[in-house]
Length: 472
Image (tube, rainbow, N blue to C red; front, side, top):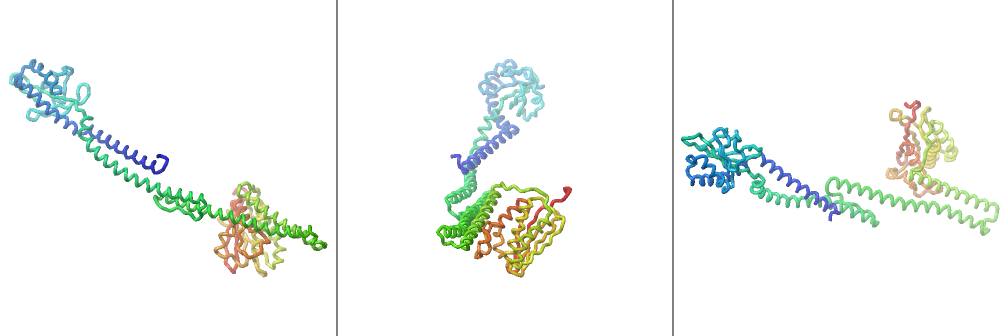
């Protein structure tokens, strides 16, 4: 029963309610200890016993006329009959007679100073033993002797009075409060548990493969936040699954094309179709090129797999940026000349970064290669660098005058196998270059972003932390 959140919340609310009711009762009990209500109730009961005791004494004669010795003989039976304790005090408050005989000779100063109204007094006093007693007294004045006081005392049973007088109404009010609180707790627990159950149902639906399942965003703020986070996670999981499906499809497609070429030309060699030296050389060249293409694809996939597994280790050398970028431009110069695209280098000297020179060269060479490939003849590609963020970051930009990238495509260009131009021939690559570039930049503590305007060109920016000599 207590395995569900609803039952546990309900039980916790009920326990809290019972604890609160117990604290209320305890508070009332403590209040009663310091309140005159229970003493007043005790003295009212004692007044009844005192009247009966006086009546019994009067049957033996007027108290004023009864000799002290005879009065003492009458005290014990009357006290036992009326279930009270009877004391006789002189005008100094000293106990002369005690129906139980234990306080003889003790003095009750508070009684001696107590106000007397029409020969009567009432209240409480501390006994010689330190306990509190309630009393009702009668002052007796005889013509031939000193005045004395007859006290009818009893120890107030506060707990009994509390149970008899305060417990019943408190219990009734507590029962009503408990029922109402239980109903309210039931509503609250359901309002918390129901949205969580809907989130759990959505999770179960996703585990069954039901795509597009979302949890309703309802309930308390924390539960709504949980549902919103769950929906975000579900969307990411669905996107990841779709990405995996696309990954398998793309890898299959990228491998199928070279494998088809390899299979066809190798078959031509085997069955003698390629019998002349020229056709044999052409078949061997195609097989070699397609095998090399497959090798590059496998290397790129393995590199991304190492990044995903966190096993990619980068060198942490101090690298001067200007020579590295000049080397990248020199390597791409033949390609840019063949494409009739001008390469422009604008890089300041003396800028250093910490990282792997070979991987950084791979980053900028890949960006230059992409820009040159997408820039029409007569265009230009500019590789520039400059310090930003008060000299703590260097921003390297590759700007081209190509066709540009549509705005809706920009967020996806760093995805694996994603290619902006779906119709272009895939012979040059599998769409993994920018994905690898992003991982290398990220491993160096940097960021990469793209900006583009269709028809005007694109700019890709790489920001890397600057290394300052001397630790500055």
